[in-house]
Amino acid sequence: MSPEPGDPRSAGTQEGARRSRTTLMVVAGEASGDLHGAEILRELKAREPGLRILGIGGAGMAPYLDRQLADVSDLSVMGLVEVLRHLPALRRIFRETVAAAVEEDIAAALFIDYPGFNFRLAKELRRRLPAVRLHHYVCPQVWAWKKGRIPKLGRTLDVLYCLFPFEPALFAGLPVEAVWVGHPLVEVVRPEVDRPTFLAEAGLDPGRRCVALLPGSRRGEVSRLLPVMAELVRRWEGDPARERVQWLLPAAATLEEGFLAGFLGDLPVHRIRHRTYAALAAADAALVASGTATLECALIGTPLAALYRFHPFTYLVAKAVVTVKHFSLPNIVAGREIIPERVQGQVTPENLADTLASLLDPGPAQRMRSDLAELRGSLGEPGAAARVAVHLLEGLGRT
Image (cartoon, rainbow, N blue to C red; front, side):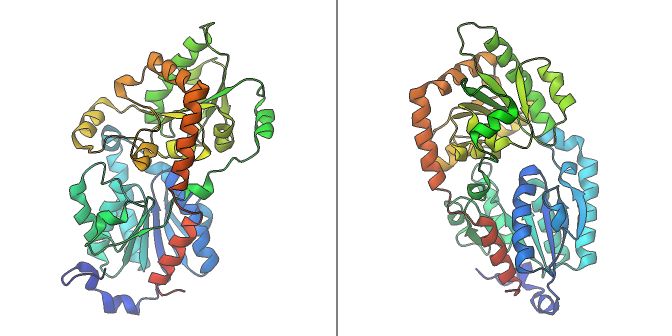
């Protein structure tokens, strides 16, 4: 829809027409956003090589940025307590990003997920640069946290790129253009190598089943989940009645070996680097920190359980505001429980052992694989990044 009278987006229309419209700001705040951002920037540069791009990104986005303002690692914090601890640094980056947008006279901004930081940034850019087109990629889970935020969000942004088909309807009647582009993971999530190659590289026995442990990519969440996972491995290995499995830990690039070793010690857990999807494909079951990784595992088709363990204060806040029945993305998208969820006090070695035994049971595992295949089909066709790039450039009059 077009901006309504009095909407700040209409204030600078003539000024915007005089802009060169060649500078774009892109802001990602965590590793998953950097992954999505890299795909979009690659598509943008392929179609418009002269487009100048500045912003915040990680190793994936860096090759496409003409000016990098900060790294995603500078922003990647999770939970209320953790954010408060890093607040001074976050405020500094915020000020520097706004200043760069004004200095560069940007024509548009693309915010990739990370809503806490990015929506504050969008509001400030709307105030300082009313003619700039504001795009957000990955619809925030307002349907989970506070539906009352939907109108405010719909009046701040020009374009909202949605990953799930049910999301655009939430913004009907608002001046934002909500566009379903499909989920980028549909094309991104594929094993880096085939199973025999992966097993050989990792020194694994093809005759024994594998279990993947994904405690997250942020040090805070890893510190809360990995000790419980480590105790699970210790007890499982010490129980002669349990199947002898091979434990895999696909480690995020942000997690140093010394940090992981502090939790795992000499437990027989194979650290996997740069082969996360191959590890998930080789695994017969997975225990996964809730977040994007649960959807990645679901797309691979590996039976999984989603785990969530907050800082205690953050958990109390979340309980007060969350409005959906499920917290894991596979269950939210499916509209029912297709994978087990374990949250806070349910995340114990005993509960995880029982959950894992169920995931390894051939009957339940096959039923879950069927549900996960159905889920994959509901997430759209490949090409989400290209659809975003084309739409964004059309809005800037660059196609």
